[in-house]
Amino acid sequence: MPKVSTVIPAYNSAKYVCQAVESVLAQIYQDYEVIVVDDGSTDDTRQRLMAYEGRIRYICQDNAERSAARNNGIRQSTGEYIAFLDADDLWLPRKLQAQVAFLERNPDVGLVYSYARVIDADGKNKPFLKGDFPEQGVSTAHVFHHLMLGNFIPCPTVVVRRACLDVVGLFDESFCYVEDWELWLRVALRYPVGFISEPLACHRVYGEFWPAKLDKYHVQDATVRVLEKIFALAPELAGMADLKQRSLGQAYWLGARIDYALDRLFEARQRLEQAVVYDPTLVSNTQRFLESVLTFAEKLYDTQDTPLAEAQTYLGRVFSNLPASLPHLRGLKRKALGALCASRVYSGHVLQNRAAVRSSAWRAALYDPSWLINLGFLSLWTESLIGPMPASLLRKLIRREIRRQRCLS
Image (tube, rainbow, N blue to C red):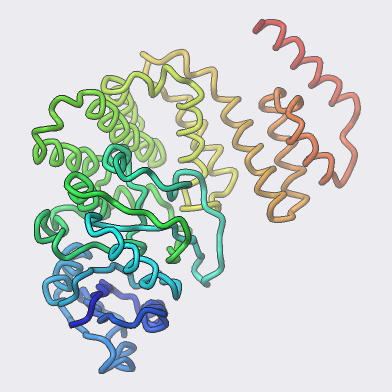
């Protein structure tokens, strides 16, 4: 029997599935089997996989979404450990070697995950935004509590013990898109979760409109249902009122941001009000609220592919259509737009796009003149200037900011 069973669900994945399989076959650690579950593809996925006959197990089923495909693969697997890989993602060569060694050293751990690189459609590395994946490993004792606030475990980085799945069960096929988060929660509720602080997989993003993708799978309601299921499964959580309030607040706030992006303003206001009922700190801490709106605006197209104009439109829609019960947030609109443009200054600098730095810096300063006293912002602007900034405008902006600061003090 192989030590590790690799399960790859595939639906119309002909373009990338062979790359996924090759990334498994290129592993340094070789005690594994590869199971590809074709979830009713209508393209030539099957024909492309015929080249791997004898090296992989190919299973074909009627289309039933990836939860059912993964479960089918798990049931037909034989390994002590189960590893997951989507057909458009990749593993790096050390993945299984590092994670099997970790699980062997830590027999109490039920699941281990790692960082993941973000790649584009052509396999090129892309920067990822704060919140996409964990910046640092969460301590084993607190993984469950952090997971209740949102998923940070990339599926292609996970290896889980079969014995663990025998206890907690497989993927819940009533969920789609959040099914991995729901399973990780059930595992983390009963077992320690391990983390390896190096990228061991690559997660591919295409730049599609992320809120529409979330809406397709009814994520606005699914996140709440996941949390309600977990609390029903674990009566011992009944005394953790703060955790329940915060997690449900985050779930409703995610739903509100999706609805704002889709211009469903009535639903967005309702969900935001519900989020505040559960977790008032979402709006009492205005900086926290501002950062969460900005992060979503930057991710409308997965990572940093969101056009500035669309992100600006999104922010304008949010701050112009807040619930009447939250008037103190309306004044954040220009600050949010300024921060959005300032973020493009920094990303433009990383990408060595001087024109983007210059145009974004102008907009940031016009929306929120307080950026003119940020030395890092000013140094990047100065470094990347193509033409001089009129001294009269600079003096005017500085005087305006000084007056504003005096009023605040």
